[in-house]
Length: 65
Image 1 (tube, rainbow, N blue to C red):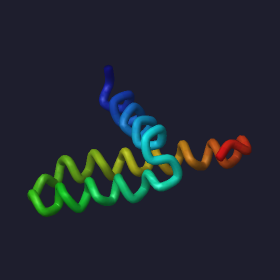
Image 2 (tube, rainbow, N blue to C red; image 1 turned 120 degrees about the horizontal axis):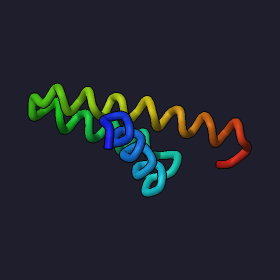
Image 3 (cartoon, rainbow, N blue to C red; image 1 turned 60 degrees about the vertical axis):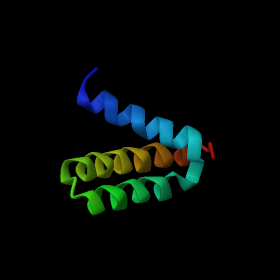
Image 4 (cartoon, rainbow, N blue to C red; image 1 turned 30 degrees about the horizontal axis):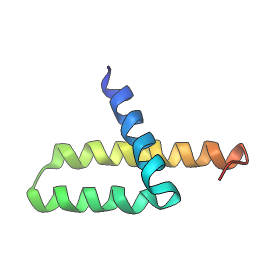
């Protein structure tokens, strides 16, 4: 599995478990990692957030909520 596939997988997992409120879970993960000083982890979750936004946009454009 490539890193990009891993990121998409995380974004899909967040969407499946948190729906449209997944952005909040992603923000919590970033905050938690910031407190730990894990900047690589924060960067990963930032990318997950970008993919999550893309997923939500695709679903909205397709008329799926």
